[in-house]
Image (cartoon, rainbow, N blue to C red; front, side, top):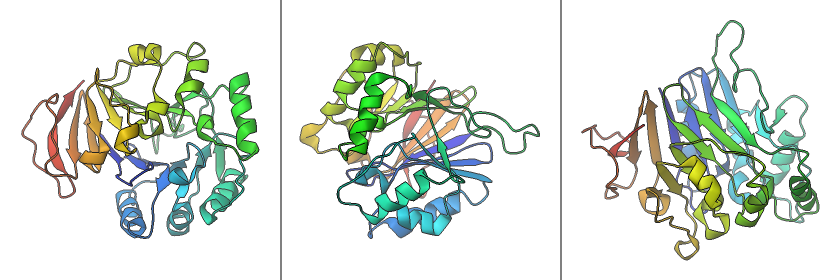
Length: 297
């Protein structure tokens, strides 16, 4: 069993996975003075019995690293995963400076790329003491010319959106989930024929669900998602994906996915939010979430 939480942080992204093994994964960070202590305290509490804690940064835009310095100061990030890059900013915030320190650290940084492997990320240790986290990287292919151009753009201080990796999390006999960071439609169209994406039960729409992050039709047909989570982009910029079952974080608030064999129980923090495509298994509400139904896999 594992728990995935998509935290409602406004116009940005922040997730964590509490794995069934002795792993805990944080993906991106967007906190301010109104919520940083509450969110960080929750992460500390939820990860306290885990031995391996990693932070995956999709890319260094402020809405994905805001509060990183505070988080690092509180928990001491020892495993920092990101694509290898030399992104720069004309106006360097304290969070971007901390991102660069972690990114460039010989001891803490692990650079991710398609089919990379690492003990406890997607490999068991010999003693199977901590177990694998079930995380796999599907993109980038680092020698791809379009990707190299995006790395160059980021180095020159332009948008780093398209250096975002595609991340897969899968639970044995359970859910498969995809993250796309802030990949943009035009870039995904360039690379859509280079990689095949697997079927997935839940995907987090790129670029917070903006129309500018529309996933190519060919990919969506291959993925065939049962749920698309739409992030907290401004409502007039959202691609609502009417052909698919969606959960919209603007109105759902925090979203909690309790994942176990062949099922995912789903909870949200907004009490009046509901959908009509989930199975009602009469689960009790949690202290931090209202049960809205179960996704049968």
